[in-house]
Image (cartoon, rainbow, N blue to C red; front, side, top):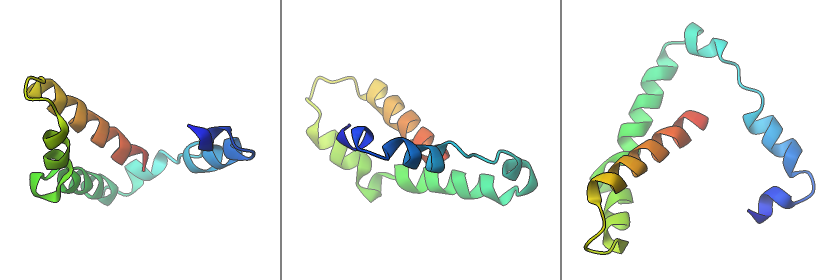
Length: 81
């Protein structure tokens, strides 16, 4: 949160996120396969993300709900990046 409040943060965010070229998604179909590969790669249970998260959850926590939240969040971050 602090990084967003620093001087020049707005310009950095604008240059990274604010200048999307959506035409690339139609012109280069390989972008879609790369994005899907990244999502499956980063969600794999043997890569530690889900295993590390699960080890810190209380035993009574809703596993299905947490899995959906993790999957959705990971997919959205992959789309942004």
